[in-house]
Image 1: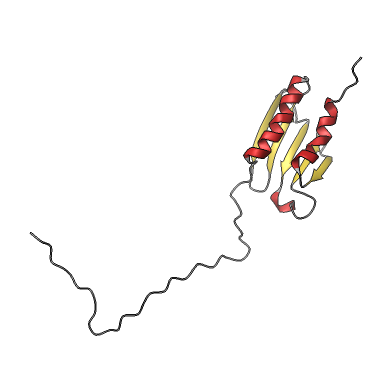
Image 2: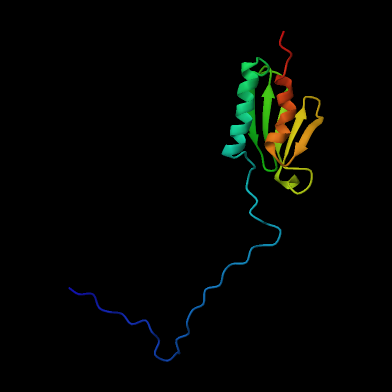
Length: 132
């Protein structure tokens, strides 16, 4: 059995070609993600420093928080303590003070900038010790 061909064209109307229009983005909403996180390259830099500090016996634990406006890498000497340092990524500050910041235990901002490696140098100074 062969199905019957259906003709949906309306004989009384003229056919008008359909145009496809691109959608316009809503103002103020510019691809803002649900949560901020560190990318693979940034985590590689942070975990490289973390590994060196663990080997030196300075740090023992870490925690990562991904929130709506900030991603935080917290460094602990012991798990039950407050973090010694917090490495934060705030995309809203990328055009002002800088995307990355290192914050001490007391809440003081130790270094802020646009390049993660230069911001983390403030923590690498802790590794440099005089050898007897």
